[in-house]
Each structure stands twice: as structure tokens, then as C-alpha cells.
Length: 88
Image 1 (cartoon, rainbow, N blue to C red):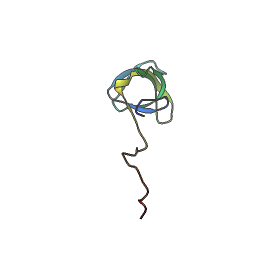
Image 2: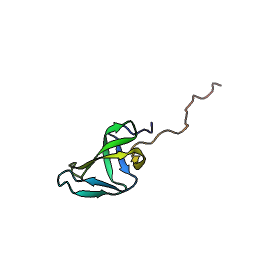
Image 3: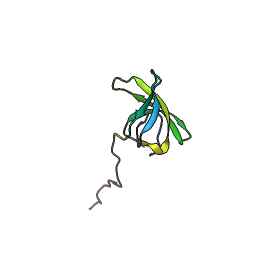
Image 4: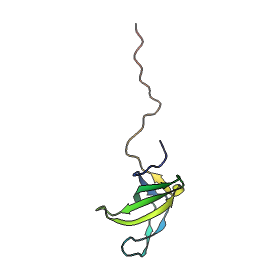
């Protein structure tokens, strides 16, 4: 499944301007910045939670799907089927 889902870890594919949650100042989220998907808007955009290393949210922004890359932790099997050997 390649679609982005709630709670997926994603990374930005390009820089984005955001508003800091506490200071309300504009901040620059850099390409590669990671966040967690909180909500989907018909797979066209997602609400992303951006946190620091301690898990404190510093920004929550709606980001278009085309500007996100779903990060993957586990490999997938590729065209590999294991069959029992033919009887002799």
C-alpha cells in the first residue's frame, strides 16, 4: 500500500513556510523535515505534526500530498514465491 495513512511518518520534498505553535513566528521547514500524519483531506493534503527531538510539537501544517514522501521502515518482498519441491 503506497497511500499515505494517518500516523505515517513523512518527509517534506520541498521547503515550506509554517507558523511556530508557541511563538507564532514564521519558520522555514526544510526539505527532508520529518513529521507525523494526523489527518487526511481526501488524499489531496494532510495535516502534519512537526516535533522536536523531545516530541514537542513546534508546528502543525496542512501540506499537499505532492510535497510529501512516506517514509518506510520495513522492506517488501518482491515477486518471490516459495514452492515445495516436486515429488520424485
